[in-house]
Length: 221
Ligand code: GRF
Image 1 (cartoon, rainbow, N blue to C red):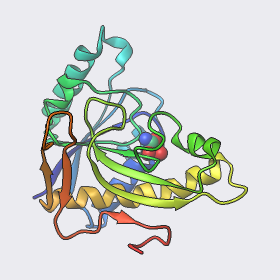
Image 2: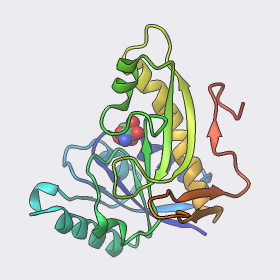
Image 3: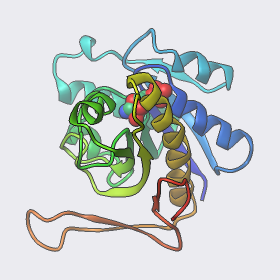
């Protein structure tokens, strides 16, 4: 099953680049049907254009409220033939208008081991807290901020003397690998979502035949 992907970005687009590279070298059975940025100056738009992928800029500022912005995103993605969505550094929250259009088919990459350090600048939060370990999480998106069911996590050490850029670079390298792996699992049809067992509980994601956590040494250690 090939994935028809829409990728939403707000900035540099290195995770988008990792997806395009994986498709290009045959590791990921997918096509990026559309890249949408909410910012016209996002570097990822150039990366997409170089790969021959269609791009759109849709600014939340041009829409009266979240539902109308979400509806515009959905329309653009559907028109382009996207059936699965990856948030790759997309800095806007998505509401039910968007999420109901792609049920259990919106994936996010976040640079911490959730539920620690949700929201903006997770690396700064981890450094400020004095954590010794952080990492990255791929999860399905729900209506909260970085709260959806976890698909996979990778741990990354925080070393003495790390500044923000050093830590962010170490985490980012793992993000690229983890996001591509997770997309491969979806493309291979190995991902099952189990609804919450009781009201207020959490949905679970099971990936058949895959290690879904990666330790400090890089592998499943
Ligand atoms: C990544 O750290 C991602 O986890 C976070 O925003 C950053 C985006 O980086 N949500 P890039 O645009 O993919 O290079």
